[in-house]
Structure formats: C-alpha cells, structure tokens
Length: 112
Length: 114
Image (cartoon, rainbow over all chains, first blue to last red; front, side):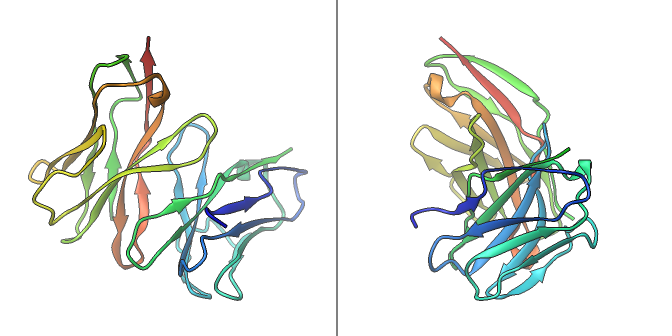
C-alpha cells in the first residue's frame, strides 16, 4: 500500500482480555517501530524491529506486552491481560534505509 | 538519554501571520536529527521537516522552516503565512542512538484564527 496501515482503527476490550494490533508497513521499509500515545502526551517508544528481529524492546512497559514481525513485514503488537491504563493510541511507523519515520493512523485502544 | 522540551502547551496565531513553536533538546549524541510532526484532530502524525545536527543551513520545506541553534540546543519551527488548516498539535522530536527511535516532546496545540 501507499502508506502505513494499522488495523483495527478502534478497539474496545474488557479488562483482562487479550488484544492484537496489526501494522502493515510501507513496502520495502526494513525498520518498524511501535509507539504509544496517551491523551495529552507525545508518542512514547515501545519497540523497534530491523527486519524480523526486535532490535530494541526497551520501551515495552511490562511483560504483558509483546510484538512480533515474523516475515520482516507485517507486525503484531500483543497485549495480554489488558488493564485500563493500557488505554491509548498505539502508533506504528516504518522507515526506509535512508531514515525518517512514516506513521500509520494508529489504533485507539479502550479498555473498559 | 535524549529529551525534548516544548514549553508552549498552546498558541494562537492570526491567519496569514507567522508563528514560532519552541523546542529545546538534550542529547549526548554527537550526530542526531531533529524532526517536527503535525498531528491534526484525525490523529495521524504528518512529517513536516528534518534537521541534521551537522547541517549548516536551516532546513526549509515550503512554509515551514526550522530555526536551528546548536549552541543553545534549540530547534524552533517557524510557520509562515498561517492557514486555518495549520490548526493542529505539533510535536518536536529527536532520534535516539543506533536504533533511530524518536523521542517526542509533549507538543504544542496551535490554533489559527480567521
């Protein structure tokens, strides 16, 4: 596709449930990032993939959060046992080798 | 560790006038990039302009220019001839280390008044 695609655009889930958020990056971009943006804040880094491997997962808040990118393209962010504090917009960005980050529209996660 | 500070939570500007959005940064890296993104109410992050730390000229992209003052560690965004469509949140960011992850400030909400 022309841009970074994230699905779903909105997700409402009950506390304690498991959710998966998908990111389809721009074709050919080897680097992929996940960020989380809480209300009134700037995006905060969660995890970075270079190809299939997670090169930096230092931003993941705890072990309930996990992300994969098995074929070096689409990535899935997985959140187990969701808590109300996980409610935020989850942004995905991909980058070409030349640098710069192109963001998707985000997934708004609401945990009730 | 890198840090971005945006001290203006909100700004007003009259249509067709210029406005400056402030950004200061802190980094221990010798080579780094500075970015500005626009986030309208629809939520997408739109890349506006980039300045490399070794670039001698201030970056410009259309109506956007970046006033880069390395000694003061500031990277202010100047928007000339403001338009109503410029109303949005604006985020300053720097890239951190080998992974180029972006570190964002808290943003400035710009309102352009007719």
